[in-house]
Length: 423
Image (tube, rainbow, N blue to C red):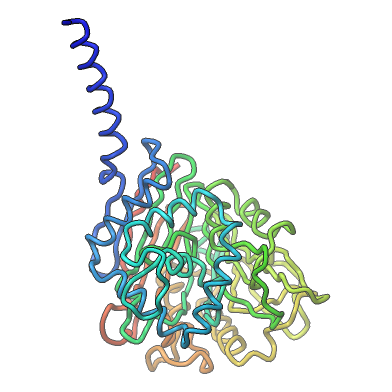
């Protein structure tokens, strides 16, 4: 009898211990409200499954931002103007879902399991469904119309002698600054797959981010007017996350995303930086003859009518400019003025550019505050974030769009600590 009781107690202890390990996941997710943004860490170091991580993250999101669902739902309602288009976008998302890496699907569905709408897709109900959370994560793949820009200095032109990169994110943020209220710096702490992203709460891909091998990447839209199809297509921001997690070099990240077997719904650019260099992947997936998928570097040949003129520096707006690629630059009323501003402001800084001067270049707005892109404003009325990153030091600064009110005339940068191990 005593022996049986001892065995029973051991069984209870084992079950209790195993239950504690799988049930206590709150320690794997930390969310800290910094005022301008949320600093979030998803810690996989104890081997937590991606589905469980998503569930833990979902719980912490709702505790930190009780109106999280209402914020995103109101944003969806604004950017998708009718129920018919809403249904079309959900259909597009469904066609892309099967090509998403299973780990990322598990995270998204884990978050969704904590949301209130379940499987009910109702635009404007103040709730989020699983499909709507997928839609949020696939916005760059199912809809477009955003503008961005970026510039890097490196080598002899950088005062640090290593790369300094500036990136502007120009997205529609909602009539009530919905996106500004859920801006995040999110760290996936996962051993040699650790990455940090700068985006929005609940978004699991890469809009802007970097890995612990000091490779930075940021997406930019680049429309060619090619017909849209989502059949058997992939998500390029989620593929970019995979590349940052698994590739150790700038070229390795570019090679993964530009591979012919990975087909996407929209053409795009990816600004890439490491401690020594910066390049732009021109990922033109259209079916016409001018469909280059290759990396542009400082010494690349450019299309006729496009000039850069700087060594040890690289700039980009929403244009393909590689020799032989589709020309969506020379006649574009948004791209040409910003490209000209970038060149003229960089020229004013001379042969060596320091960090403050790089901020001044990327914050150019004609002296009258952030206005129109057609006026050449790099820092403009649509700007959500300006990111400054020095790969060698993992130095990150971000000017976040204010949660309320207008953009300041001069962007206010916040130093953001990087929480994974520096190599």
